[in-house]
Amino acid sequence: MDDQENPHAMEELEKSFYNDGYLLAEKLVKSEDLPGSLQNAVKQFYSVLDSFLEIFLKEADSQGTPAHCKKGCAWCCHQPVFAQTHEFLYMKHWMFKNLGTKQVDKVFKRAGKKHKTTKSFTQEQRLLHKEPCPLLVNNTCSVYKVRPMACRIYLSRNLASCISEFSNPGDKSSYPMLFDLPLRAGRSMNNGFVNRLKEMGIDVEEMVIEQGILAAHGN
Image (tube, rainbow, N blue to C red; front, side, top):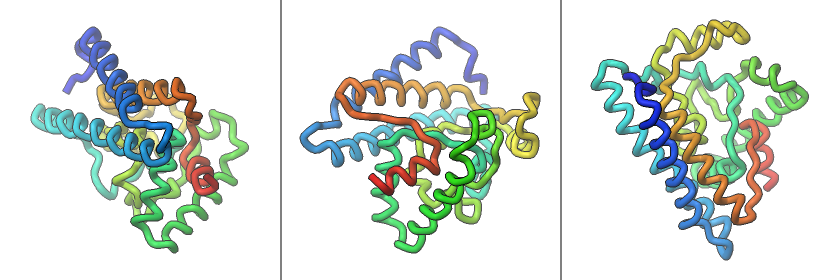
C-alpha cells in the first residue's frame, strides 16, 4: 500500500486531522472541570485516531501489504517513546482503576530504574538506547488500551526491518519500515489538540515515557 503517492492529498489529510484534534480540545476541555474534561478529551482523541487506523489497516491488508505488528511483538517497545503530559495523566487514572496495586507499583519502580539510567543521556544516546518500556510485561503492553498516540501510529510493514533496527542501533542503513500515513495523520491531530490546549493556557510538555510516568505519579 503506497501511502505517499499523492502529496497534495496528504497535505489536505494532515490539515483535516489537525482540525480534528484542535476542535476536539476546543469542544471537550472545560476550565471548570479541567481534570475530568481533559481525560474525556484524550479518550475521544484516541477513539477518533483508532477508527481511522482500523480503516487504514483493513485497506492495507486488502492490498496485500498488511501491518506486521501483533501481540507479543515488542521490538519497538525497547526504544524511547515520547508522549504528552495529558496522556500520562490519563494513563495514570486508567492504571489505578484497572491494574492491581502491586502491578502499578512495579510499573513505577521500572520507570524509576530506567529514568535513573537515561536521565543524563544526550539526545543521541537516548535514541540509541535499547531497554524495555516500563509498561512492558512478558512482551505485552500492560496499558494497551490507553497506550500513547506515538505507540498507536507506529505500524510496521516489515518485521525484519524492526529486528534489524533493534539489533543495529546507530546503523543509518537499518531502520524500521513504517507506514507513513498513520504517522503523519496522528502527529497532525496531536499538533492540533496540543496547540488548542496551549491557547487555553494549559501547560503541555512532551516527555519520554519513563519520565512521564514518574511525573504523573507525582502529579
